[in-house]
Each structure stands twice: as C-alpha cells, then as structure tokens.
Length: 83
Image (cartoon, rainbow, N blue to C red):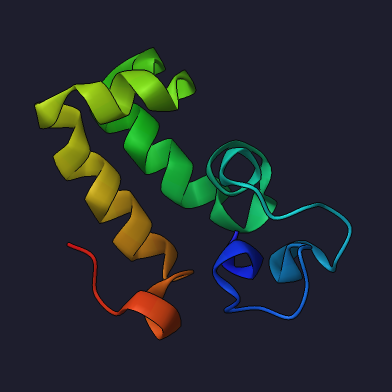
C-alpha cells in the first residue's frame, strides 16, 4: 500500500518476497509477517476483526486497530508512531 503513496518502488509486499500485491486487505488479513499481531487484535476484538469496516466504525475498536498498526511497524519509517 505504500506504493500508492509513492513511498515504495514496488506494489508488491516486501515482507512476502514480492509475491503478493501489498493491499490493505493483504496487510491486515493475509500477510504471514503480521499474523501474530493480527491474532492479538483478534483476541481483543473477537471475530469482528474479519471486517475492517466494522473496526473502523466502532470507536472502541479503533484504539485496538491503532495499537495493531503500531505493532506492525510497517508504516513507521514513513509515518512515524501512529498510536
């Protein structure tokens, strides 16, 4: 997704060895590099983590989402701390 912001030279996920497009869906649900962080988020929110829209619409869930994004460290070099 950093490619969309012109912060990466490739549209592919560097964590997966350039085999998957780096999309929001991939980063949050498919990328094995962040699987552990996603499990922590899932424990906090339950099965509702399967809907990013649901998470974004719940104020209480956004706190956990920001912690998840910060734990990923994926955007830190570009955007700094997010939580």
